Image (cartoon, one colour):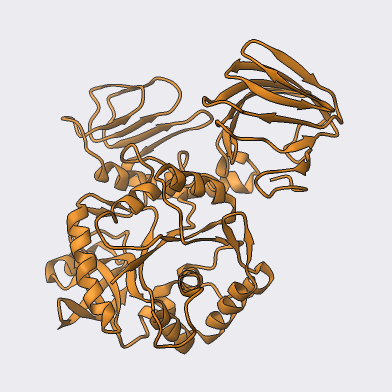
Length: 478
Protein backbone atom coordinates (compact mmCIF):
# COMPACT_ATOMS: atom_id res chain seq x y z
CA UNK A 1 0.00 0.00 0.00
CA UNK A 2 1.31 3.42 -0.99
CA UNK A 3 0.86 6.16 1.57
CA UNK A 4 0.18 9.75 0.59
CA UNK A 5 1.49 12.03 3.36
CA UNK A 6 -0.63 15.10 4.05
CA UNK A 7 1.43 17.77 5.81
CA UNK A 8 -0.59 20.48 7.58
CA UNK A 9 1.56 23.60 7.75
CA UNK A 10 -0.90 26.34 8.60
CA UNK A 11 -0.22 27.29 12.23
CA UNK A 12 1.21 30.52 13.62
CA UNK A 13 2.93 29.19 16.77
CA UNK A 14 2.42 32.38 18.78
CA UNK A 15 3.49 30.75 22.06
CA UNK A 16 7.04 30.44 20.67
CA UNK A 17 7.32 34.18 20.06
CA UNK A 18 9.71 35.94 19.42
CA UNK A 19 11.25 33.17 17.28
CA UNK A 20 7.95 32.05 15.80
CA UNK A 21 5.90 34.82 14.16
CA UNK A 22 2.81 34.97 12.03
CA UNK A 23 4.72 35.22 8.74
CA UNK A 24 7.57 32.92 9.82
CA UNK A 25 5.98 30.34 12.16
CA UNK A 26 7.57 27.52 14.17
CA UNK A 27 7.17 24.79 11.53
CA UNK A 28 9.58 26.73 9.30
CA UNK A 29 12.22 27.06 12.06
CA UNK A 30 15.09 24.74 12.98
CA UNK A 31 14.25 24.41 16.68
CA UNK A 32 15.66 20.97 17.56
CA UNK A 33 18.36 20.36 14.95
CA UNK A 34 19.84 21.47 11.66
CA UNK A 35 16.58 20.89 9.77
CA UNK A 36 13.33 22.80 10.19
CA UNK A 37 10.33 21.12 11.79
CA UNK A 38 8.63 20.87 8.38
CA UNK A 39 11.70 19.19 6.92
CA UNK A 40 11.98 16.81 9.88
CA UNK A 41 8.32 15.85 9.41
CA UNK A 42 8.97 14.87 5.79
CA UNK A 43 12.30 13.15 6.48
CA UNK A 44 10.97 10.86 9.22
CA UNK A 45 8.80 9.22 6.54
CA UNK A 46 11.93 7.81 4.90
CA UNK A 47 11.68 4.03 4.60
CA UNK A 48 7.88 4.00 4.52
CA UNK A 49 6.54 3.34 1.05
CA UNK A 50 4.96 6.60 0.03
CA UNK A 51 4.10 8.96 -2.76
CA UNK A 52 4.90 12.65 -2.93
CA UNK A 53 3.25 14.62 -0.10
CA UNK A 54 0.27 16.93 -0.30
CA UNK A 55 1.06 20.17 1.54
CA UNK A 56 -1.59 22.49 2.97
CA UNK A 57 -0.18 25.86 3.97
CA UNK A 58 -0.98 29.51 4.51
CA UNK A 59 -0.75 31.52 1.30
CA UNK A 60 1.75 33.89 2.94
CA UNK A 61 4.16 30.99 3.64
CA UNK A 62 4.07 29.44 0.17
CA UNK A 63 7.56 30.37 -1.04
CA UNK A 64 9.19 29.50 2.29
CA UNK A 65 7.54 26.07 2.28
CA UNK A 66 8.49 25.49 -1.36
CA UNK A 67 12.12 26.43 -0.70
CA UNK A 68 12.40 24.10 2.29
CA UNK A 69 11.06 21.18 0.27
CA UNK A 70 13.36 22.08 -2.63
CA UNK A 71 16.32 21.80 -0.24
CA UNK A 72 15.25 18.19 0.39
CA UNK A 73 14.78 17.62 -3.37
CA UNK A 74 11.13 16.76 -2.77
CA UNK A 75 8.45 17.83 -5.24
CA UNK A 76 4.97 17.73 -3.63
CA UNK A 77 2.01 16.13 -5.32
CA UNK A 78 0.22 19.40 -4.56
CA UNK A 79 0.71 22.49 -2.41
CA UNK A 80 -2.69 23.84 -1.46
CA UNK A 81 -2.87 27.48 -0.41
CA UNK A 82 -5.44 28.35 2.25
CA UNK A 83 -6.61 31.96 1.81
CA UNK A 84 -7.83 31.84 5.42
CA UNK A 85 -7.63 29.26 8.17
CA UNK A 86 -10.76 27.21 8.77
CA UNK A 87 -9.36 24.47 11.00
CA UNK A 88 -8.10 20.98 10.30
CA UNK A 89 -11.34 19.40 9.04
CA UNK A 90 -11.59 21.58 5.88
CA UNK A 91 -7.81 21.52 5.36
CA UNK A 92 -7.79 17.70 5.30
CA UNK A 93 -10.81 17.67 2.99
CA UNK A 94 -8.94 19.84 0.49
CA UNK A 95 -5.91 17.54 0.77
CA UNK A 96 -8.10 14.47 0.20
CA UNK A 97 -9.57 16.07 -2.93
CA UNK A 98 -6.07 16.90 -4.16
CA UNK A 99 -4.92 13.30 -3.56
CA UNK A 100 -7.90 12.04 -5.59
CA UNK A 101 -7.38 14.48 -8.45
CA UNK A 102 -6.70 12.69 -11.69
CA UNK A 103 -8.07 9.37 -10.43
CA UNK A 104 -11.21 7.80 -11.81
CA UNK A 105 -14.44 8.93 -10.18
CA UNK A 106 -15.50 5.29 -9.78
CA UNK A 107 -15.77 4.45 -6.08
CA UNK A 108 -13.95 1.17 -6.75
CA UNK A 109 -10.94 2.95 -8.25
CA UNK A 110 -7.74 3.55 -6.33
CA UNK A 111 -8.48 5.33 -3.07
CA UNK A 112 -5.30 6.95 -1.69
CA UNK A 113 -4.31 6.17 1.88
CA UNK A 114 -3.66 9.47 3.68
CA UNK A 115 -1.22 9.88 6.56
CA UNK A 116 -2.09 13.28 8.05
CA UNK A 117 0.73 14.95 9.99
CA UNK A 118 1.08 18.45 11.46
CA UNK A 119 4.33 20.05 10.29
CA UNK A 120 5.37 21.27 13.75
CA UNK A 121 5.80 18.16 15.92
CA UNK A 122 8.93 16.59 17.37
CA UNK A 123 9.25 12.79 17.26
CA UNK A 124 12.54 11.58 18.65
CA UNK A 125 12.12 7.85 17.90
CA UNK A 126 11.43 7.61 14.17
CA UNK A 127 11.45 3.76 14.05
CA UNK A 128 8.77 3.60 16.77
CA UNK A 129 6.74 6.19 14.85
CA UNK A 130 7.00 4.18 11.65
CA UNK A 131 5.90 1.02 13.44
CA UNK A 132 2.81 2.84 14.73
CA UNK A 133 2.10 3.97 11.16
CA UNK A 134 2.19 0.35 9.98
CA UNK A 135 -0.23 -0.60 12.75
CA UNK A 136 -2.60 2.21 11.77
CA UNK A 137 -2.35 1.15 8.12
CA UNK A 138 -3.94 -2.20 8.87
CA UNK A 139 -6.85 -0.46 10.61
CA UNK A 140 -7.32 2.13 7.87
CA UNK A 141 -7.26 -0.52 5.13
CA UNK A 142 -10.34 -2.07 6.76
CA UNK A 143 -12.23 1.22 6.59
CA UNK A 144 -11.44 2.68 10.01
CA UNK A 145 -10.37 6.27 10.66
CA UNK A 146 -7.26 5.96 12.80
CA UNK A 147 -5.64 8.50 15.06
CA UNK A 148 -2.45 8.21 17.06
CA UNK A 149 -2.65 8.44 20.85
CA UNK A 150 0.60 9.39 22.55
CA UNK A 151 1.44 7.24 25.57
CA UNK A 152 1.31 9.85 28.35
CA UNK A 153 4.52 10.30 30.36
CA UNK A 154 3.15 12.93 32.76
CA UNK A 155 -0.20 14.40 33.87
CA UNK A 156 0.06 17.18 31.31
CA UNK A 157 -2.78 19.71 31.23
CA UNK A 158 -1.74 21.19 27.88
CA UNK A 159 -3.07 18.32 25.76
CA UNK A 160 -6.47 16.86 24.99
CA UNK A 161 -6.85 13.17 25.86
CA UNK A 162 -8.31 10.09 24.15
CA UNK A 163 -9.79 7.27 26.20
CA UNK A 164 -9.34 3.89 24.61
CA UNK A 165 -12.14 1.34 24.44
CA UNK A 166 -12.22 -2.29 23.35
CA UNK A 167 -9.34 -3.71 21.26
CA UNK A 168 -9.75 -3.60 17.49
CA UNK A 169 -6.91 -5.61 16.04
CA UNK A 170 -3.68 -3.94 17.18
CA UNK A 171 -5.59 -0.68 17.72
CA UNK A 172 -8.41 0.27 20.11
CA UNK A 173 -11.87 1.64 19.64
CA UNK A 174 -12.19 5.21 20.94
CA UNK A 175 -14.37 5.48 24.02
CA UNK A 176 -14.27 9.30 24.08
CA UNK A 177 -12.25 12.44 23.46
CA UNK A 178 -11.57 14.65 26.49
CA UNK A 179 -10.73 18.36 26.47
CA UNK A 180 -7.59 19.60 28.24
CA UNK A 181 -8.13 18.53 31.88
CA UNK A 182 -7.13 20.15 35.15
CA UNK A 183 -4.18 18.72 37.09
CA UNK A 184 -6.26 16.36 39.23
CA UNK A 185 -8.09 14.79 36.29
CA UNK A 186 -4.84 14.54 34.31
CA UNK A 187 -3.33 12.54 37.19
CA UNK A 188 -6.35 10.24 37.19
CA UNK A 189 -5.99 9.73 33.43
CA UNK A 190 -2.31 8.89 33.77
CA UNK A 191 -2.89 6.41 36.59
CA UNK A 192 -5.70 4.60 34.77
CA UNK A 193 -3.49 3.75 31.78
CA UNK A 194 -6.52 4.00 29.47
CA UNK A 195 -5.89 7.56 28.26
CA UNK A 196 -3.53 8.92 25.61
CA UNK A 197 -2.53 12.42 24.61
CA UNK A 198 -4.32 13.52 21.45
CA UNK A 199 -1.54 13.85 18.86
CA UNK A 200 -3.52 15.40 15.99
CA UNK A 201 -2.14 12.78 13.55
CA UNK A 202 -4.44 10.53 11.49
CA UNK A 203 -4.61 7.82 8.86
CA UNK A 204 -7.53 6.91 6.59
CA UNK A 205 -8.47 6.57 2.95
CA UNK A 206 -9.26 9.82 1.15
CA UNK A 207 -12.77 8.84 0.03
CA UNK A 208 -13.53 7.30 3.42
CA UNK A 209 -12.80 10.62 5.15
CA UNK A 210 -14.84 12.60 2.63
CA UNK A 211 -17.78 10.19 3.12
CA UNK A 212 -17.77 10.74 6.89
CA UNK A 213 -17.37 14.51 6.47
CA UNK A 214 -20.36 14.50 4.11
CA UNK A 215 -22.34 12.55 6.71
CA UNK A 216 -21.54 14.70 9.75
CA UNK A 217 -20.68 18.11 8.24
CA UNK A 218 -22.42 18.24 4.85
CA UNK A 219 -22.17 22.01 4.42
CA UNK A 220 -18.41 21.93 5.05
CA UNK A 221 -17.98 19.04 2.61
CA UNK A 222 -20.01 20.84 -0.08
CA UNK A 223 -18.09 24.11 0.27
CA UNK A 224 -14.68 22.38 0.26
CA UNK A 225 -15.59 20.51 -2.92
CA UNK A 226 -16.80 23.71 -4.59
CA UNK A 227 -13.69 25.63 -3.51
CA UNK A 228 -11.43 22.88 -4.82
CA UNK A 229 -13.37 22.56 -8.06
CA UNK A 230 -12.76 26.28 -8.63
CA UNK A 231 -9.03 26.02 -7.86
CA UNK A 232 -6.46 27.53 -10.19
CA UNK A 233 -2.80 26.67 -10.69
CA UNK A 234 -0.33 29.42 -9.70
CA UNK A 235 3.23 28.36 -10.51
CA UNK A 236 3.58 25.10 -8.51
CA UNK A 237 0.75 26.02 -6.10
CA UNK A 238 -2.97 25.26 -6.05
CA UNK A 239 -5.06 28.31 -5.23
CA UNK A 240 -8.51 27.26 -4.11
CA UNK A 241 -11.51 29.48 -4.83
CA UNK A 242 -11.29 32.01 -1.99
CA UNK A 243 -14.81 33.37 -2.49
CA UNK A 244 -16.29 29.88 -2.14
CA UNK A 245 -14.05 28.85 0.76
CA UNK A 246 -14.74 31.99 2.79
CA UNK A 247 -18.19 30.63 3.70
CA UNK A 248 -16.76 27.35 5.00
CA UNK A 249 -17.50 26.60 8.67
CA UNK A 250 -14.37 26.42 10.83
CA UNK A 251 -13.86 23.20 12.79
CA UNK A 252 -11.27 20.64 13.78
CA UNK A 253 -11.33 17.09 12.46
CA UNK A 254 -11.90 15.90 16.04
CA UNK A 255 -15.17 17.82 16.43
CA UNK A 256 -16.37 17.50 12.85
CA UNK A 257 -15.68 13.80 12.28
CA UNK A 258 -13.65 11.78 14.77
CA UNK A 259 -15.96 12.29 17.78
CA UNK A 260 -19.03 11.37 15.72
CA UNK A 261 -18.00 8.48 13.48
CA UNK A 262 -18.56 4.91 14.63
CA UNK A 263 -15.35 3.81 12.92
CA UNK A 264 -12.67 5.77 14.84
CA UNK A 265 -9.76 3.85 16.38
CA UNK A 266 -6.67 4.93 18.28
CA UNK A 267 -3.16 3.50 17.80
CA UNK A 268 -0.78 3.92 20.76
CA UNK A 269 2.36 5.92 19.98
CA UNK A 270 5.40 5.87 22.27
CA UNK A 271 8.05 7.67 20.23
CA UNK A 272 9.27 10.73 22.15
CA UNK A 273 6.49 12.94 20.76
CA UNK A 274 5.96 16.63 21.52
CA UNK A 275 3.87 19.28 19.80
CA UNK A 276 6.40 21.89 20.98
CA UNK A 277 3.52 24.10 22.01
CA UNK A 278 5.53 26.31 24.38
CA UNK A 279 9.06 27.22 25.41
CA UNK A 280 8.89 24.77 28.31
CA UNK A 281 7.85 22.00 25.87
CA UNK A 282 10.77 22.89 23.59
CA UNK A 283 13.11 22.71 26.60
CA UNK A 284 11.80 19.21 27.38
CA UNK A 285 12.13 18.12 23.74
CA UNK A 286 15.80 19.24 23.60
CA UNK A 287 18.98 17.72 25.06
CA UNK A 288 20.02 19.65 28.21
CA UNK A 289 23.52 20.04 29.62
CA UNK A 290 24.66 18.88 33.07
CA UNK A 291 22.84 21.84 34.68
CA UNK A 292 19.57 21.16 32.89
CA UNK A 293 20.06 24.11 30.55
CA UNK A 294 19.44 24.16 26.82
CA UNK A 295 21.60 26.81 25.13
CA UNK A 296 21.40 27.91 21.48
CA UNK A 297 23.71 30.47 19.90
CA UNK A 298 26.16 32.77 21.69
CA UNK A 299 25.20 32.06 25.31
CA UNK A 300 27.21 32.39 28.56
CA UNK A 301 25.65 31.28 31.85
CA UNK A 302 26.76 31.22 35.48
CA UNK A 303 24.92 29.47 38.32
CA UNK A 304 21.93 28.93 36.02
CA UNK A 305 19.83 25.76 36.03
CA UNK A 306 16.87 24.27 34.19
CA UNK A 307 16.63 27.14 31.72
CA UNK A 308 16.23 27.62 27.97
CA UNK A 309 18.66 30.27 26.63
CA UNK A 310 18.60 31.30 22.97
CA UNK A 311 20.70 33.92 21.19
CA UNK A 312 20.18 34.90 17.57
CA UNK A 313 22.36 37.97 17.03
CA UNK A 314 24.41 38.84 20.13
CA UNK A 315 25.81 37.51 23.39
CA UNK A 316 23.19 36.46 25.94
CA UNK A 317 24.60 36.24 29.49
CA UNK A 318 22.59 34.77 32.38
CA UNK A 319 23.46 34.69 36.08
CA UNK A 320 21.55 32.92 38.86
CA UNK A 321 18.49 31.91 36.85
CA UNK A 322 16.30 28.94 37.80
CA UNK A 323 13.77 27.50 35.34
CA UNK A 324 13.62 30.51 33.06
CA UNK A 325 13.36 31.16 29.35
CA UNK A 326 15.48 33.86 27.69
CA UNK A 327 15.13 34.26 23.92
CA UNK A 328 16.93 37.01 22.00
CA UNK A 329 16.28 37.94 18.36
CA UNK A 330 17.43 40.94 16.33
CA UNK A 331 14.44 43.00 17.38
CA UNK A 332 13.02 41.50 20.58
CA UNK A 333 13.98 39.78 23.85
CA UNK A 334 11.69 37.51 25.86
CA UNK A 335 12.35 36.76 29.55
CA UNK A 336 9.87 34.55 31.43
CA UNK A 337 9.70 31.87 34.12
CA UNK A 338 9.08 28.47 32.54
CA UNK A 339 5.83 28.11 34.46
CA UNK A 340 4.45 31.28 32.79
CA UNK A 341 5.36 30.62 29.15
CA UNK A 342 1.74 29.82 28.21
CA UNK A 343 1.09 33.55 28.70
CA UNK A 344 3.44 34.54 25.87
CA UNK A 345 0.45 34.50 23.52
CA UNK A 346 -1.01 37.37 25.61
CA UNK A 347 2.05 39.47 24.74
CA UNK A 348 1.59 38.66 21.05
CA UNK A 349 -2.05 39.75 21.25
CA UNK A 350 -0.99 43.06 22.79
CA UNK A 351 1.61 43.62 20.06
CA UNK A 352 -1.05 42.98 17.44
CA UNK A 353 -3.53 45.34 19.12
CA UNK A 354 -0.85 48.05 19.23
CA UNK A 355 -0.21 47.67 15.50
CA UNK A 356 3.43 46.68 15.99
CA UNK A 357 5.09 44.63 13.28
CA UNK A 358 6.86 42.31 15.74
CA UNK A 359 3.82 40.03 16.12
CA UNK A 360 4.00 39.05 12.44
CA UNK A 361 7.43 39.84 11.04
CA UNK A 362 11.05 39.43 11.99
CA UNK A 363 13.43 42.27 11.31
CA UNK A 364 14.83 40.06 8.55
CA UNK A 365 11.98 39.44 6.10
CA UNK A 366 12.12 36.48 3.71
CA UNK A 367 11.06 36.72 0.11
CA UNK A 368 11.09 34.08 -2.67
CA UNK A 369 14.31 35.61 -4.03
CA UNK A 370 16.11 35.80 -0.65
CA UNK A 371 15.68 38.24 2.25
CA UNK A 372 16.11 41.80 3.45
CA UNK A 373 17.16 42.98 6.91
CA UNK A 374 16.28 46.49 8.08
CA UNK A 375 19.48 47.75 9.72
CA UNK A 376 18.62 51.38 10.50
CA UNK A 377 15.85 53.88 9.82
CA UNK A 378 14.94 57.53 10.37
CA UNK A 379 12.22 60.01 9.31
CA UNK A 380 13.34 60.08 5.63
CA UNK A 381 15.80 57.21 5.24
CA UNK A 382 16.15 53.46 5.73
CA UNK A 383 19.15 51.14 5.41
CA UNK A 384 18.67 47.48 4.44
CA UNK A 385 20.87 44.51 3.67
CA UNK A 386 19.55 42.49 0.75
CA UNK A 387 20.53 38.84 0.20
CA UNK A 388 19.72 37.48 -3.25
CA UNK A 389 19.95 33.72 -3.77
CA UNK A 390 21.94 32.29 -6.71
CA UNK A 391 19.84 32.38 -9.85
CA UNK A 392 17.13 34.50 -8.21
CA UNK A 393 15.57 37.65 -9.65
CA UNK A 394 13.66 40.47 -7.99
CA UNK A 395 10.64 41.86 -9.82
CA UNK A 396 11.00 44.63 -12.37
CA UNK A 397 9.56 47.46 -10.28
CA UNK A 398 9.45 51.16 -9.49
CA UNK A 399 8.65 53.41 -6.51
CA UNK A 400 6.67 56.65 -6.45
CA UNK A 401 8.13 58.11 -3.25
CA UNK A 402 11.66 56.84 -2.69
CA UNK A 403 15.06 56.71 -4.35
CA UNK A 404 17.56 53.90 -3.68
CA UNK A 405 21.35 53.66 -3.51
CA UNK A 406 22.82 50.15 -3.89
CA UNK A 407 26.32 49.03 -2.87
CA UNK A 408 27.31 45.43 -3.64
CA UNK A 409 29.29 43.97 -0.74
CA UNK A 410 29.43 40.31 -1.87
CA UNK A 411 28.98 38.56 -5.21
CA UNK A 412 28.08 40.03 -8.59
CA UNK A 413 24.64 41.47 -9.43
CA UNK A 414 23.04 42.12 -12.80
CA UNK A 415 21.23 45.47 -12.57
CA UNK A 416 18.38 46.80 -14.69
CA UNK A 417 18.21 50.59 -14.36
CA UNK A 418 15.75 52.17 -16.77
CA UNK A 419 16.96 51.09 -20.23
CA UNK A 420 20.42 50.06 -18.95
CA UNK A 421 21.46 46.51 -18.00
CA UNK A 422 24.90 46.11 -16.41
CA UNK A 423 26.91 44.13 -13.84
CA UNK A 424 27.86 45.44 -10.41
CA UNK A 425 30.72 43.71 -8.62
CA UNK A 426 31.82 43.91 -4.99
CA UNK A 427 32.49 47.51 -3.83
CA UNK A 428 30.64 48.98 -6.82
CA UNK A 429 27.42 51.01 -6.51
CA UNK A 430 24.54 52.59 -8.40
CA UNK A 431 21.67 55.04 -7.82
CA UNK A 432 17.97 54.51 -8.66
CA UNK A 433 15.99 57.78 -8.88
CA UNK A 434 12.33 58.04 -7.86
CA UNK A 435 10.03 56.64 -10.55
CA UNK A 436 12.70 54.67 -12.46
CA UNK A 437 12.12 51.00 -13.31
CA UNK A 438 14.76 48.72 -11.80
CA UNK A 439 15.63 45.15 -10.99
CA UNK A 440 18.35 43.08 -9.27
CA UNK A 441 19.37 39.63 -10.53
CA UNK A 442 21.94 37.17 -9.26
CA UNK A 443 23.49 35.39 -12.27
CA UNK A 444 26.16 33.69 -10.16
CA UNK A 445 26.51 30.62 -7.94
CA UNK A 446 27.00 32.42 -4.60
CA UNK A 447 24.57 34.77 -2.79
CA UNK A 448 24.70 38.45 -3.65
CA UNK A 449 24.62 40.87 -0.71
CA UNK A 450 23.70 44.51 -1.25
CA UNK A 451 23.47 47.43 1.15
CA UNK A 452 20.45 49.48 0.11
CA UNK A 453 19.96 53.06 1.32
CA UNK A 454 16.43 54.33 0.73
CA UNK A 455 15.57 58.03 0.92
CA UNK A 456 12.31 59.85 0.33
CA UNK A 457 9.04 61.09 1.75
CA UNK A 458 7.51 57.62 2.20
CA UNK A 459 9.39 54.35 2.74
CA UNK A 460 6.58 51.80 3.24
CA UNK A 461 6.73 48.39 1.58
CA UNK A 462 3.48 49.13 -0.25
CA UNK A 463 5.19 51.83 -2.37
CA UNK A 464 5.97 49.36 -5.13
CA UNK A 465 4.63 48.77 -8.63
CA UNK A 466 5.62 45.44 -10.20
CA UNK A 467 5.79 45.22 -14.00
CA UNK A 468 7.28 41.71 -14.27
CA UNK A 469 7.74 39.03 -11.61
CA UNK A 470 9.00 35.45 -11.74
CA UNK A 471 6.96 34.54 -8.64
CA UNK A 472 3.47 35.50 -9.81
CA UNK A 473 3.30 38.76 -7.83
CA UNK A 474 2.93 41.19 -10.74
CA UNK A 475 0.84 44.20 -9.73
CA UNK A 476 0.91 43.29 -6.03
CA UNK A 477 2.76 44.73 -3.04
CA UNK A 478 3.36 41.39 -1.20
